[in-house]
Length: 345
Ligand SMILES: Nc1ncnc2c1ncn2[C@@H]1O[C@H](COP(=O)(O)OP(=O)(O)O)[C@@H](O)[C@H]1O
Ligand SMILES: [Mg+2]
Image 1 (tube, rainbow, N blue to C red):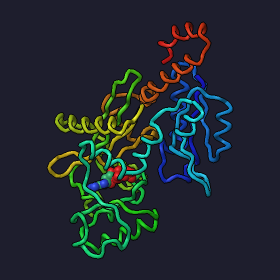
Image 2 (cartoon, protein in one colour):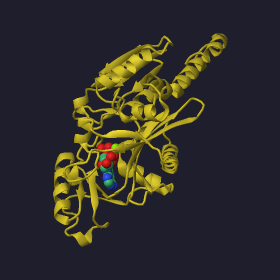
Image 3 (cartoon, rainbow, N blue to C red):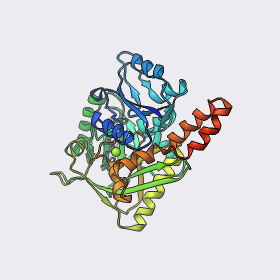
Image 4 (cartoon, rainbow, N blue to C red):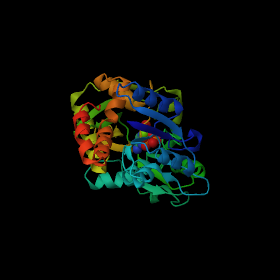
């Protein structure tokens, strides 16, 4: 099958998707050696012209390593929209579902309406509240950007226990991100991440692991940008079957209730009593070989190799693309295609 992987120069992004060119090259290598004879090409696109060149080559399937391409002085080009408008199958979730990944409040309100627990929150700009008593939730609180990823804007100062620290973190986040800030109740329990893969027969393969962030000099365990850059967090198998069941159930419910397709990673945190809360969804998860949570979680929970993870992540979309090719074929050639379909992957 003719497959193209689409990414964009990484320094332009605040939400990084699969990751740097290293991650995209690992996906490319996994696909090239999966024995199905796919012709695969990796494209780093920064303009609509770059995308139009791909359309001209008419791939049977595209793998979107990022959600959108930022274009100077113009609206972002959302790749899932762009390729579906050109009738090209793409891996991953549709544009409207990807909004849940980009906007944490949208995901939290949608899922809490479906009965999924998530930390209490409010959204505010600097100066909106003038003293502690006006705040909708009491301290301790946790401040973070609405739509960043990779721990950007998150550090020990995100955890605040008084109004002075609240105002100071609020001001610095607002200056960096120039948008309202998400303020949550502070969850003081453990942290988990769950890789979910939906195969062509609608089966879910779920890999839940515990994430142990490094302990900072202030004694906090927060997965901020520095921990992610240093790669100093640890992922470990969940030994407690009750916790594993609860974390897995929440992740499956969140994945299904958002209408996610093919794959996604759900971040969960517990409070001190062990109750699970949805934290955020990563629907274009980091895929760096050897460090990203998605492939690592699959390895820890199921002993899947990186290449197997890629195969499973693309299982659903390869079937969709094969069926689409079949339905676009003249009737008599379709028979032979059906016969070969089961050996496609
Ligand atoms: N409400 C909260 N209470 C405690 N810690 C939190 C809370 N929200 C986020 N964190 C910490 O901050 C980290 C990053 O938050 P998250 O919303 O997942 O942002 P990102 O998109 O940058 O990964 C989490 O992994 C967790 O360690
Ligand atoms: Mg996260």
